[in-house]
Structure formats: C-alpha cells, structure tokens
Length: 400
Image 1 (cartoon, rainbow, N blue to C red):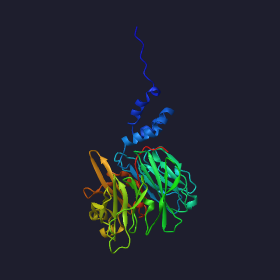
Image 2: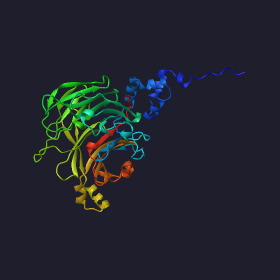
Image 3: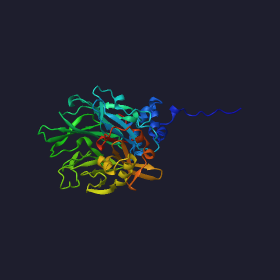
Image 4: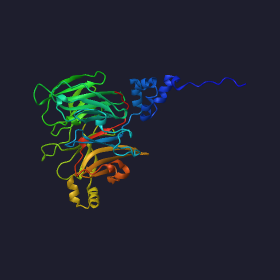
C-alpha cells in the first residue's frame, strides 16, 4: 500500500517573499495581468516598495516609442498617433504602447472640451482639457499600459505658461512643475510644485523675471532636472530635488540672427540633445549634446542630408532643390538595442514623407524595415509634424 501523497501548496499559499521574487522578474504586461489573479496579488504588486524594486530592476533608457500629436481646426480632440521604436513590434500605427490599447485619450478620458497631451516623462503622460479657457481646464495624469488616469488639483493661478511632469521610475515618485503668472508684473513668473506624495500645489522660490520667450510647455526632464530652452538668450534648468532655478548655458546665437532657432530639444537614451537650424539650408546641421556637468554643449554628430535629398528627389520625381526647400523637420532621436548593437538614428519628416537617418554611419535607413509603422501613416497634404508635437514614451511601472 502506497504512503500518503504529499500535497503541494496552492498558488495562494506561496510564501510572500517567494511570490515577490517571482513577480519582480516578470515582464510588465504579464505583471499587470497578474494583478487580476486575486486581491492578495493586487495588493502586493501595488505596494510602493514592490513598485520601486521592480522599477530599479527593469530600469530602461530606451524609449518604447513616441506619440505624434497635431491639432486640426475642426476636431475637438488632438490628432494622436503612436509609433513604436521596438523593432520586434509589428503592430500597426493605430496601436498604443500595448497592442491591445487604443492610444486615443478621448476614449480614456471623457472631457467635454476634448483632450490633448501637455507633457510626457518616462511612461507618464500629462494631459488636459483642450479647447477651453484656463479656468475651465482640467489636468490629468495617465498611465497608458494600465489604462489609468487621475484628475489633478488645479494650480492656484490665473495663467499657466507651462506644466511639466518629472518622474523617476526608480523612486516611483513624480512631481508636477507649473510655470504660472505672478502678481509682481506681467514679466514675472512663479514656479508651483505638486508632489504625488502630497497632492497639492505650493509655491517654490520667489517669482523670477523673464526677458524673452521661453518654451515652458516643452520642458525636458534629464539629469534630475527640468530644462527649458528659450528663443532668446535665456534658457533655464530647475533642479527638481532641491527646487533651485538656474540659467542654462547655451550656444551663441549667430550675429545675423536676433533670436534662437531651435529645431529639436529633447532627451534620448540618457542624453540631452539640441539642434539649431538657421537660414534656408535645412540639409546640413549639427546635433549638440549637453555635458552632464553642464559645462557646455559639444557637437555629437554632424548631419548632412544632401544625399538623402537627392534620393528623395529621384523617388518623388522632383528637383533636389525643391525637396531641400521643403525643410527637414527633426521629430525624434531614437536609441534602441538591436541584437548585440545599439542603433542611434533621427526620425525626420518632410511633407508626405518620413525619413530615418543613421547618425553613426550618416546614411538613410529603410523606413519600411526599421520602423514599419511610419509607412502606414497616411499622406497629409504636405502638412508637417514638428518636434514640439512629439512625446516620448517608455514602459514604466507606476500606479496612480
């Protein structure tokens, strides 16, 4: 007669430390499905300590993709498309970070004034009501993979000149930074800060004077700070942890020009990049990178698109000067891992065409092979996307 059969522990009886060590190794999409198994698993996965540990283990410097946003005159919601940077992702352009997710914020957030993206940072999207006055505007924070959104407290000000999000996935903490008006004068600005831990706005520092236009709506989070480029001689950076505002060193503006001409300003792969294009020649420019100690900008890549313009001219049956005159718009710089090597390329746009340019080899890449989703975007009557309408996206584990 055989002895008693030793019973195995059921899935709900697994020790918590063993279960945690298993869950923390799962891919993000699998982990999110595990939240649906039972209440115990949902609480464990939602625990801030687990989220922090998971984020540290799965920290990424490479973007999953980016959103293209454009505003159409007769549409309540902004036109929004998601493009994956993952070479293994064969999903169509209509898919979001999760291939089962519709990227349209209108289907996620029901706002009678429509919805638009205001800012993005490491997997979090900051969006708001679209066509309305500031007093009627509602701000939201969204996490596309979890389909979560949360209305944010309203900033205590009359005018918002820019609202940005600073999110460090390794700490599972985000801060909102608002550039608001000041009672001192129309030329002063006040920084307001709201932390995810406290959920209310407060003033940070004293009002500061601005002398020219600064793109506060296009802040870039890098190296622990938010960075804002100006069209004049002033550009600023804000250390989020210490809440200190400082001037940011910038390349000199050419003498024959009265203002700066930014053609791209963003973070990619842990680098802060800047492209400036002056004059009608758009086929030759430099990609500059900021030193991590803020000692200044240096030229990282020399770009010459003349050969690309010639190839496009032949394919479009146009004169090469005509193609160059259209203007190459830099949308995004992509760092991604492909097998054993890293690719670094620019996504460019001219009317009706997307172009990929390998920054390491100074050659054009095949759009259909490298980023097939771009091939499925319809031609849009010559209208341009620009870098100011691009919002980078990364997979990040963050619960609201």
